[in-house]
Image 1 (cartoon, rainbow, N blue to C red):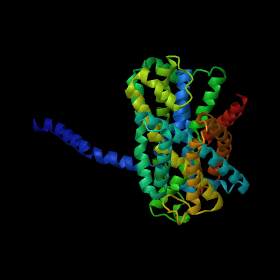
Image 2: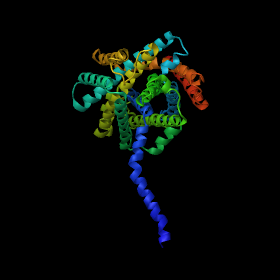
Image 3: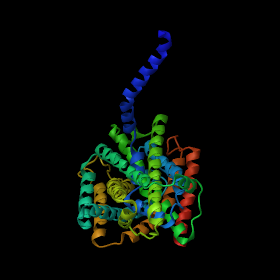
Image 4: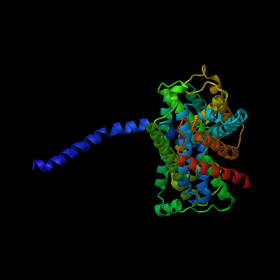
Length: 437
């Protein structure tokens, strides 16, 4: 009998050990996540949430399928940017500097700063509107508080501290999944809309598709991803370029998993935001919201106070996550173009020019709210700049990632380059469509 029960006993012990080790395994998995998850989550900033909300309100579930389409494209681009940072030991603009004259890079960095500043202003406005809905305190006060608080955190926190804060803030995105499930969709209809693409109808449909592409595959994410790989290396004590060069297959695999999870999460959230507004606003004929605040206010009588609360809390959390990314990516681009000392681990005294760009972006974003710049029109111009800038940057990224000498014998894979090439063509098409529409 003992012989018969022994295997069961061993199985029970193995199961017990597995359960006991589970917290440790989950902790190691969480610690392994980094730039990929943060970058993916930063893509769902308040302005992106507004874009997805308007897509659902205007077109219902007609563009749900775009979440499945943009995931592999976004993942391929961000993985390629991560590889450039890991292999060269430098940020993205440093690699582009080997391929293009400085005036081209200065123009690109300036365009990125303008687009990011407008985006920061729109994000602060969305966060402040959400805070006013929750508290009743005037939104102008919240814009100032958020701007000063985020600026202080970016200046004072070192990279490891800031990365941990941003990683935890990424969990805020789960509120949009909960909000959609709370409404109770017909999952069969949802599956059909997700897996059977429907052609956009009319100018509004095509313009919204262009906006989704531009919001999901954004230039600021390219620079942030590559620069954070360098910051990760510095955090490990590799402060010289020589010590950071090269990457092992295991490190590449870990980053692919990190980026894959981050971009997947980003697109899942996009999916559920579109679904939430499709099942509420679109279904009840409220098809022309002009801001995230209007979406939140319209949700309450249709989906209840709980759904509205989740939506507004998510706006604030994602803004806290995205704004340091927006200001930081512009600063990294300028620093690499002009050879300034850079990095969130450096203090203001040792990297004054880097933090000056961060400050300019933050202060200009705050000022936009007080001079009453229309956030919807601002986001349109952001989309225009990003729509023009993204495909040219992607072309440069492809050239850098394919250069065996520059990539020290570790260029991106053929499949990765093909996927990014397809993305580049799609973004050129989106840029052309933006003006045609």
